Amino acid sequence: ETTQNLTAAQKGDVKIALGKTTDEGELTFQEAEKMSSVDREKAVALYEKAAKLRPKNAEIYLGMARVLADAGKHDDALE
Image (cartoon, rainbow, N blue to C red):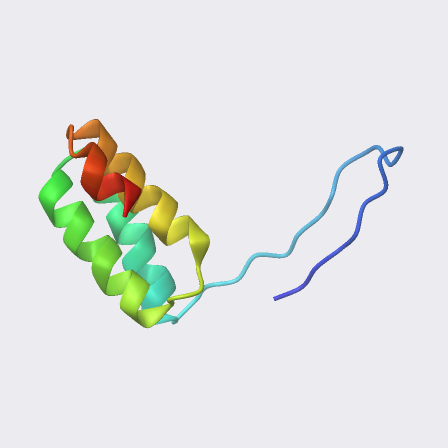
């Protein structure tokens, strides 16, 4: 992972080299994102699996909360 600090006045394109990942947690998260508009229950199960694999990844929890809220499960989304 690489980080690059940007100043508020900096303009232009930021070039980021992308690469394939073999990280099971990231791949599971990506699959959950795909499933979120197709099968919410499967998406939640995938988010839960991804969270176990990468517990510090906030995007996983946000995605799961979004899917749960969209399904009307607001209390579950807040957990």
